[in-house]
Length: 479
Image (cartoon, rainbow, N blue to C red; front, side):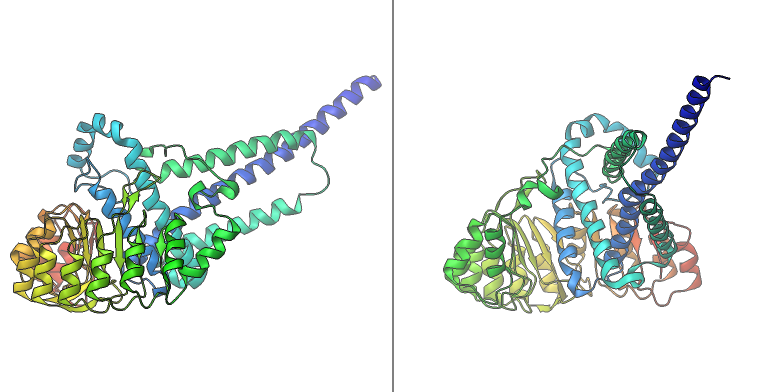
């Protein structure tokens, strides 16, 4: 055998070895990309859904709840959206009737796919953000038991891959690894596209977006001066007119996380903002401030998910008649109170004022409303939510909630009558009844017939016959 043949064989063997090593490394890198862009985001999404549904959200993560509920309400109210919206459920398949309905509406869905995809993708991303924030801050405690082992296995595998890939990094990469590196970069890109597709119903592709440095959307990127200006008002307990104008001109969503007092003049300036307004810590306002805030009209979203017309008064501890009367003239989304700190009681006069509200969406976190007040509130013609209501005494109000555009009905009732259960199931909406403590066999049988998710995570006692019926439906969640 000539030296030329021997040298050629050695070169071939060395090349094969390099390619073999490169292929093994590429496989690990592809697996790492999949873990970071598909597996872990799916687990974070499951955590976010669990925390929100189980009402176990810590106060420091409350802003995620507010944003998700706003996005879901906008998605439900979008043109062409019906009550059969999936609400962002990852599970595939479903009942034959639903599949047939989706098939019949395929042509219309194709026309509006871009808008629906953008809205749904943003909701899913916020669930992922919530789950990730909860896990990073609270560790394994934030994880539901069914996801704990999966998460630990995924993290362990990710860390092992990172260590193995780091050990193999030395010196300048060979020509083979350069080609493989290009292939891995392509796999990474496809992985990002894959997770984007997987977070959308039916694998729809998210509409193209313009990215800015560090992968942030261009409307979130601000200069150092803008960031310093933001800090001046975002965390201030009180602001003057100059700072209010500065906040409005920033073009950002206006969330005044620490604001404790507000004057009518400052409120009038803030109402001119072309974005959502949110006051998580503002405990009370005067009728004059309410009158000024009610003129807020917001603007259009740059992502196309709907108008930015939300007025959030999450910090209010009470809702006087005069304030309710003024706020009734707001025409966008109106959110008052929070699920973790609801307003104790709404007077009949305040309920009647809100029943005449012009708001497109009314999200009211109130524990108690008299039957007369509930009857008056039922006259409201927009999209209504009462997640903290502990007793539903008005048939008219229950019917109003069941016929709304929202994808779910959430109540804090401790018991249900048979008529109420029939109305809720007939609404074909997700039911979030996590304060329900007991159900009769008849109510259990009705709830077990729901074709949508039914959350009963607070159920404390129920006849075995009722539990047996509920367990026949995989969409019913029990403690």
